[in-house]
Length: 152
Image (cartoon, rainbow, N blue to C red; front, side, top):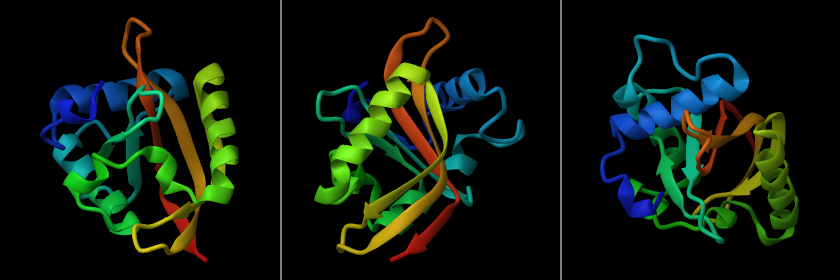
């Protein structure tokens, strides 16, 4: 999946990949049945981000909660290399997390220090990071969601 593949943040196919892979891997829904891509993008009270499978992955999705927290617009977040969401000192730890997710499929209860566009820092807490996998097991990247954060 390329960053420019998702032109519309309410793309139903991407929503199905995001929510379907979450449900398959974690055994529970990411969103309630009656909620759709518009709700997840614009109204969800939690952060959702996803990056592609590039060697240096780029975000392909960041809902409005993510955009507000990190300080990027939709067009900016979709050109951001996901490693830049962590400060230089935290990038090795972040990569270890992503490698573990690649192997295990998901990690729950993750806590990591992250950085905003303006250089502010916050702890993402109680996060879930999972592989974006379709029904056939094809990998399209990784996604993260969290609803708790603490400014540093």
